[in-house]
Image (cartoon, rainbow, N blue to C red; front, side):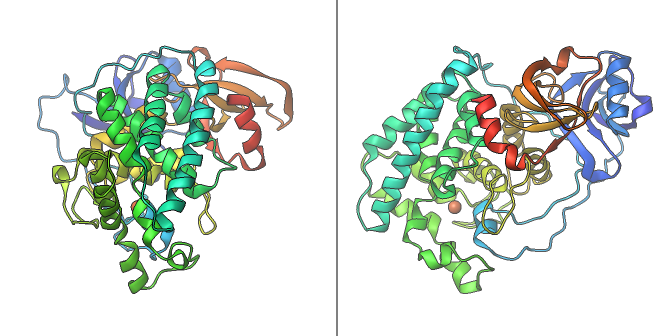
Length: 422
Ligand SMILES: [Fe+2]
């Protein structure tokens, strides 16, 4: 049972499920409960501005607990733009007062076989090749040619292999995308993130392959939609939106005719705009009627779209996107899959620029999965904002006097982050 308490009621030895700053928009939840280690932890939370805590009190309280109030997200439908359509963002949820459902049973723990910095060199090459491949097959479909499954299968096999070598290498590159062409990078990113979530679920290599193939091809049907609609910068008319909504079915038809594409991969294209609550589009199905690979791809698709800069949309920081997606668990997304995405990426993913309580700025270098607020970072700016002559590494989980306060838009510093991390 999860209970909300004042931060001053938090005690060492309690299991923490979430923290909240002033107002519900400042809520953060953890995928796994975190043990409050000592008074130092509590002091850090207070000094970071957290005012309430969500704790697991299962052993202390005899159930039932009084119901926890749930603030429904605003139901106003946003203007229909291609970006909104693509992300499937139906509700603009700002409130987060719903405690997390317990994660489903865990798959086998992911163990990295290769060090991140070794794996990331190969991952860069794999990602670049995959983007070239997407560029090629998308152009072919637009010209009315068929898709060849062979090179796609080989490319996705390399991605799956990379995720098994090191779960963070490819996924961190999906974050470092400042110079990529969105259309091609997005298909590859969705595939990478879907495979990473699938590995968290404990899927075998064959299933991860089918999931990755479906994800890299999820928007292939858009190549049969007029470019004037796809690239329209302003709001779409109802007729234009109706055209866009055909792309899952068009994609499925293309893949049905393509030799060497499995039925489960095809279902990713067909169902990736369905919502868990049935309010999406495609065949307007819900819950487990939606193919599980499509449920995974929907989470990956929305996260990458939300965190990408577009002509008509500024990218959200990962922390902001994850909060919005958390609020849509059980509505737009299967709850456990959003939690698995957080587990894959952390609250501050690798490559995120973060401000510390000291005023120093650092870049997340690797995750401490049991301490999501205390990643391993590279210090890059001192507290006066001056660039350090040589960045140095600090593991925040071992630090008493430093912790992350918030993440920041890297702005012009983004290209340098790629050099620092990968
Ligand atoms: Fe789509």
